Length: 239
Image (cartoon, rainbow, N blue to C red; front, side, top):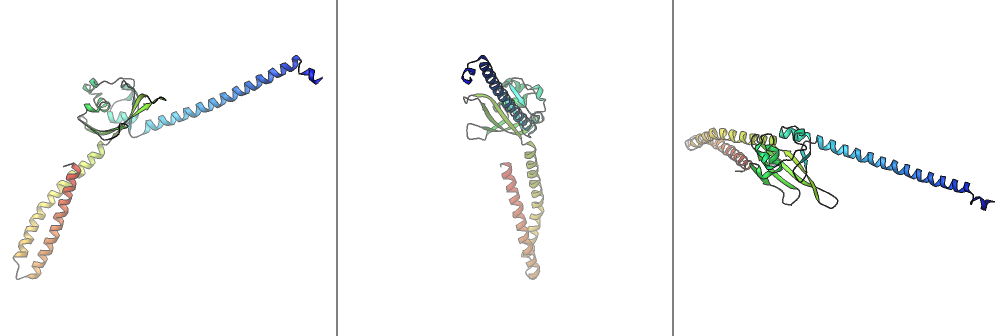
């Protein structure tokens, strides 16, 4: 009978097989999902590494002992040093005496740089304007913490923005404006004096006196524009 069948060894064998098959399918499904998640995670990591490697800003990652864990190509360009020479190396303040690691040390320890100005008002991220010498660089660094699940700092990431070229261009523009303005102001001052004298000494020639007065007004306008340019150049230079 059917009732007796459920008590036979064959039934238990079939039941065990079905349970085994269900467990096997569940394991295969779990492994497939795990492989899919792992592949997705690896792709995201590769994408992140590609972004970091090819960004124009320098990126340094280091631990609490200032051991360099990673650096991108932009760091090589800024520091003029191969990242293989610094990755895995622990940088101490004494390294500032080594010409090869001097700029790197000043970036990690801004107080060692010739000029370092804190820009950020908040504790994190820490944004600092750094100026170095030999070579002369203008760098803006942004330091953020790498936290674990307990919000404990396990490392640091520093972004280095090299503004040297932009500041050099602004400085060159300011110097050009200053020199050109001074060179224009000197002859214009002489022209103004001449026109002023003409306007005073032509009482019997009102038309010429009027022309001289018009020229005098135009010269005053030109001199005012030149003085405004010089003031703007001084403001840009911080004077």
